[in-house]
Image (cartoon, rainbow, N blue to C red):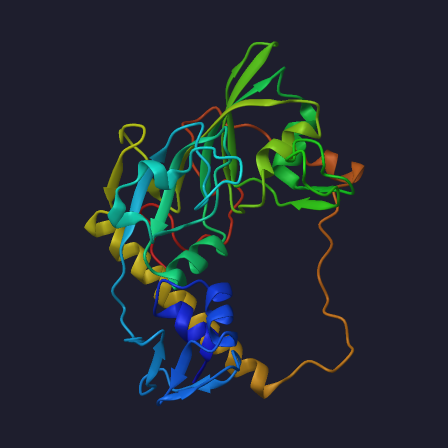
Length: 314
């Protein structure tokens, strides 16, 4: 059994939010009857669900493309200010594809898009490694190196954020790996691997140390590489990349089912707060300084929980 809104998002191009709205607006029917409750359970194997007159047919088929996003494009359908978006450049056949995360207006590089919202959600919420090449103003300081290796907690992460973003706290997990490729005082070039995709995460991280990122390019996501794909061009995933991705999705679905099963067996006591380990970066952690590697750049330096990486198996 599966919630109706999740069922629609899982087996169509609708996002969860779009599914909720369609249900509430009366566009969804189950066995011919209008259903306005997004949380109602449906049998994903035998359900007869229609949205705007079109039947949703469960399928495991999906497509993922790699787009080498240039600077100066927004990852959105429309921009109120009339700025160029990725959909102005992509072919019409990809207009309904969902971007996996974001690259901001000034950033470039690998952007994954898919025609299946369930795939987009699984990728966006995963801890898959994202590898970037960045150029910052100024040197790479010891404080940066320690925070890259140990993580960082900020009460105010407004520095480096979008000008209209709300100020507030932000947690940065330890980087999976980093390599200082150039450190010339006035500017530095780094290659970094992280497992999160928070809004302007790297720009905020380095802004905390007074360093502005002037160039940012994503090179890979979960082992899917940009390689020599020209700027502004698209490619489909290779067979091996699809194989690894399917393994990952199977693992995600299996883990989700096991989680639901465990929750039914042992529900958490009402009102009891969930325990979360502290990730606060303190001066004491400076004793365990992260050491940059002089070896060729490789991910998983800090042994992240990465189930989908190049050459890896689940």
